[in-house]
Length: 299
Image 1 (cartoon, rainbow, N blue to C red):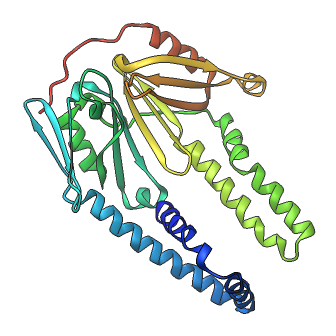
Image 2 (spheres, rainbow, N blue to C red):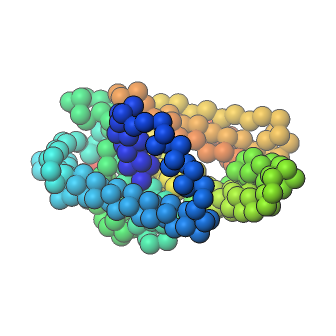
Image 3 (cartoon, rainbow, N blue to C red):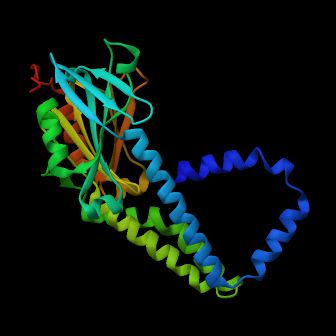
């Protein structure tokens, strides 16, 4: 929907120079004279139209999506009006990212992105969609046939409970300041307290979603901004590991980590905030140990 609104704004910006200023004044005056409920209904209808429009665009972009494995090469085809095709070798995959926004999570849907690196054509060196939208079972089945070692990891070690207040504070402190200021100086400004309450809930969900796991051959990092991201990284693709902390984290025995993966398109960075400091040290030792080198067959 954001892309749809951006496109509409770009088109409108090309025509506003031909619209007289009196039109803007009369339109603004008319809107201000309307009732509150009419305005709410109007913007709701605009949102519905944008949603329908963006849905149609998405269907045209990802319609007839197809993945084939031929001679250990993965061929991805998509598009209803404009056909696109991409060829990748599974062993060049440097990350698999399973993502879902809150609505998709409630419905049990996931989207899969992959990053690839080096050794092939220019088109093989960027992030691409492996599954536009599908169930968790479908996502796991696709990865099982392509890279079975990079499937979703169910047993994550969550960040410690003492990190919860930090996640909540980061997400909501600005909202609380705005709500208090609005309640003091703006008529009916107390209604704005809905915003920090929502942001507090968002911070709690970010805390609940954050976690990690590792074994001899891969590292799994899961976090959330708005959408949840479950990133599975082969150990052999990791270029660097960074552990850092500031004064407040040190007091609570917490740290943050950053991992960079190998990619000829410039690389990609993954991070996790406020995990246990001892766990950060263990990961540093884990990164220093060589990964097990083995060929991963594609079914």
